[in-house]
Image 1 (cartoon, rainbow, N blue to C red):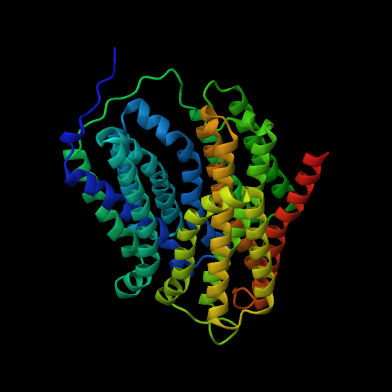
Image 2 (cartoon, rainbow, N blue to C red):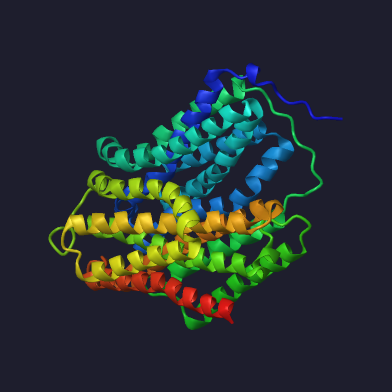
Length: 465
């Protein structure tokens, strides 16, 4: 018996417009932390390592939600699942807006992380409620609005934080999300669930999220003031290793794993995973280091930039990153993914090594952000496009979800490593990072990016052999 499909004629412009506004608000909510992170660290009295957790908590949730969101939407209905996820996001935004301390803010960020599932669910709804040609245009518009929302968040986080308070950075997008979700819930027709014999890998979801959270919190604890005794550090490492091994075992045995690790047996796949991980780790380090340096007092080696100025400084990089998504696919088709990765790696490594010596003017940091954001975006998009073309059609969803998870983990790990470097190089009197800590951070970022070149050489020799 065929499953009934909702007629596009029943779907009005208002609920579809609400989906677009929802994407815009989600993009803004996701991005407000980046320019405001130094402000949040000061207001909450936390170290750079603890501050990095604010952004990374959202990424961890996103890493585990991304591979299963579309599957859950298909099984239970895209509208129903989207409304439920937006309720969780709204609760997270409210928690962040009212947060009196770091733990509550982290909880809010963890809840907000389920927003990563909104885009695939929106695509499901567009596909079901619109004709094929129109749905493609609408999906492209939603992606553009989400990207534009990220730029809005970066640009207006400062004026909101300084004109009202940092709490309103989270409150205003959350209000927009609640309003848009209400319109979707009331006016968008329900889409029928799609029966499936595949289960949801909840044990895998829990184990991966636990592994990432314990690892990042442990890294902050170990590198923070006073650190941990060797025995405690060893015990923490054992816990992380046990969780990671448990996740691998579960994924290998699950009938419908969140990430099919058997795909890694294919050389092209694991090459792409390693490339993506290295590139995004370097990108995460850049993402964290530059706003921190902008915010350092101008009395020393920094620029004393407030949240508004930091947002303006970061905006060109956000634009470059958005443009890179379109360029990456085109470049991969014309030159091949490997050549694009090499070019992006060379740009990133050279830029960060140069920045270790040249960071006395704002334009140098702005240019570095533009170059590295564009290079990372082109490289990771080229890998996604190249992998999708190399893998069989039935495995595209599995392969791309594995790369998306790798991308998120790499960014989170990079930010946490950069924060650990700043913590380790903090002055004993002020507790603020020294200039040498930033120099070390930029140098390490360049070396991490250069690892891609070494891996390209190794895999090329292996292929020739």
